[in-house]
Image (tube, rainbow, N blue to C red; front, side):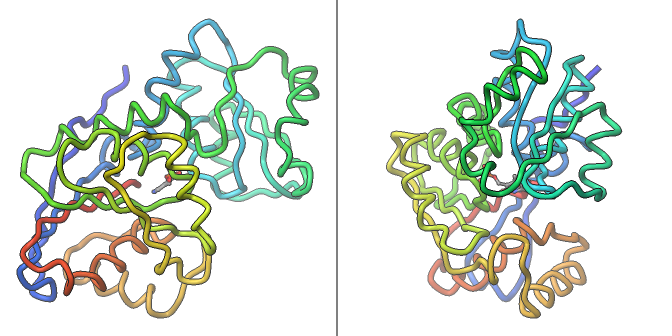
Length: 270
Ligand SMILES: *Cc1c(COP(=O)(O)O)cnc(C)c1O
């Protein structure tokens, strides 16, 4: 049986550095140990739509939380899974976990990975019929799932923040808003292209994107970010995911001066 911790808890953060800004963490990381955060929300309706297929196929980098979650979902829901991984064949904890949950991996070089549609006929020949989940799982069904996060929040708020990788979570949260504003923090360098992606996934206008806190790019870190993570853990007992969540929260702390008197929700996506 799938036991999900929903609605996910809302945790107030008392921190004098924030002045009169009120901060709550929406703890989506606690939804499920193998299907955390936005990955569960993005998969939920995709799994409904995938009924009738016996295989899920998706794309990701070698450290993709999405591949990990798809592999776990496949095991839980009795579906075969295929992960098409960017780059040379490697082994790491993420891919080892995916394989342990039954995922078959297919490595493709970066040039071929960029042109995913051209790979599909070959993948169908190799793996048979499958339900295709896009990279990062961001599609209309993912947006619907992420929108459900918003009505779970029982305090009035001005701003809801999410980290942004492929933009599906931001689009979903924006779609769920009837008041307030969603702000995405791009975790990759040159993330401005995400504005077009998000606009293609939601007709909501209640969102914007901050591209100032990528710390050098996807899965890059800076001493400043590491210091923020250590300090946050010391004060609040929570070790932040450094690829996504820490970059968002660091950005929120840096913007807090502009947000005095407001109530801000930070979604801990994983
Ligand atoms: C995948 C992931 C994201 C990115 O979500 P997108 O919908 O791709 O923008 C954010 N946070 C965590 C923890 C993730 O694993």
